[in-house]
Length: 403
Image (tube, rainbow, N blue to C red; front, side):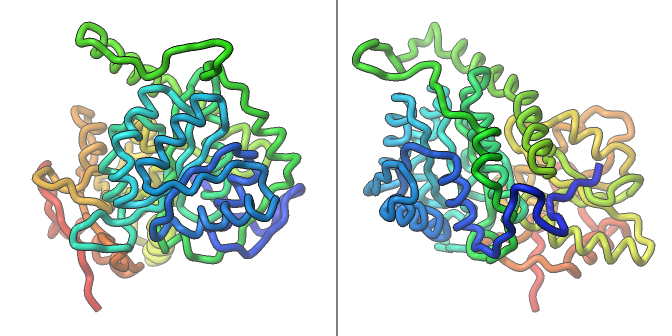
């Protein structure tokens, strides 16, 4: 199914504005009526939390903004505020995520519905402030629900979806919303801003199921003895997988209200195509332009976009790739000592053992924000279809085009 969340004009109850994507993210957090924001600035996330601090300081947002001294402290404050029943938000990037990672795992284990926007950026070293997915892949198994946005409209929309899902009493999981640093964070795009009445209809006031309160003491984050630890981890995994239908339901409800529908796996001109690109994040828009040009020339190429990273949408991936001969995974992180990129590993595992499964080609591209242009997609597709590309289970190509 081909999906698009860009419209020709604003829908009823919406106002279209030219807005930096970071400010659109902050606007969405404001409209979610968040109670607590705890964050530390780090490039390229800074414009989001700077804007939130302005909204709070100006009295435009009724929330507590906690300017902590580190990202570790930011997530620690989020754990405390969420545990008391406050709707909580944070935002980070790259080394900031690494510094807070100790508490990231604790947040999911305690089933606290914190929402975090991750402005994706390379991990050091060498030092880089530019975008790739090495930061999020470092915590791919942290137990959070994880989604990826392709453009500014999706960043805005998926913020509301994150709170809708996280606070569902049948889910109670933190959610990480990924957007590419600079490619999205610092770009001005037309954004359809919803009237507050639409948001209030979609996202009701948060009513926590469990909360710390002096009048009713409870224990949270207790010590797990060996006789219980395995069972606790199994229950955590089952709970994360059980969130899947609720994620879909919340996307459908958003679409019914706004006309913008999302799916865990989305396709673009992929029906019947024998060679498919598979992308996550903003690079999908460049891939779409490449597919347009190749199809105009009669080339049998389409595009699959992975929106939901955790819980992983196994069945939808298999369905989207069925019938293809070649799948070209555009990884934006490198799994050192492994088979290339982390996304291709997941795709190969998903397709393993299937009859007539397509051949998976792994291309690691765009590290540290390196340009991946339309003609790069065309060159990659030509290499695959001509038999020049590596196709073994442990083979990959680092594609680094030069001017």
